[in-house]
Picture 1: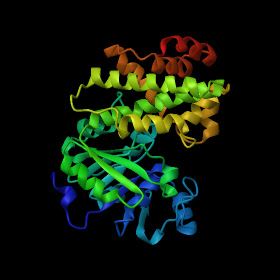
Picture 2: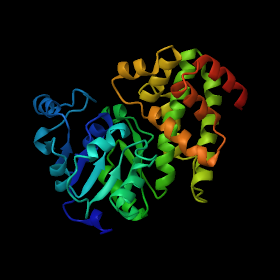
Picture 3: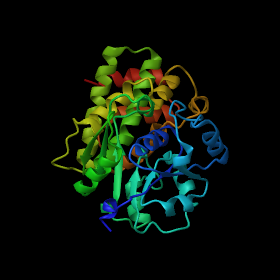
Length: 336
């Protein structure tokens, strides 16, 4: 069933209702007459029906409820679609998947999730190992791209990755529009791990910002972060044709570390300003994926031993309750 994406009248289902899911729904509606959308809170569905907006997340985007098949029933939404786009915070992914009672046979899976689940698995690894989905039927969407700028229709670039480049190109066609440029790729492993890693480094940038470090230091911190990502990918899954200086790697790191819309940078900045971790999470009212990714990368790297002083510094602050000012001060001697 590698030709799912070539079916006539291909149908898309979105699983997840946060800012990024809402942005992707907006893009799909440029080409699709109707989209199925799993929203787990009926009150949120009612708000969209009434206000034509997802007022909880990305309220700037106008929606057409008559073109949305919304339901709190995951099986109904999964059954309707040929292409299933999973856009749930990684921390809630397993709980949502526990509601699934039907087969994913003959479905094409797209992950828009930037994090790890289970035994430190990526989403593609999960679907392959648990649901026996061949990698030929799995795609990954990555940035650099913030939902807020998609909502404002500012020019942005998305990368769609799949083991078969033809499938990646077909996914590109489904999302491209005048303000979205799309790029096909085949490095599923590298893109998924880079997307998770950059959130850790955005937290580091936020912590440094919260502590009062300036742009000069930030440039060195992010340059060093990029080298850590490259080292990790080269050791854990070497790929001679991978170009980490392109947008889904370096570009995604830059926008997440610098942007005012970056929830991971915001979370880190709160930590740098003295917020306890739990208080920062509660006040944000949004998931900072880098918090969970940091623990996963720490555990994965215990096997490989890649030199990652910035990621380890973030781990010490978030999980070992070490004083941010001390940890970052010590880190400054390891950067160049």
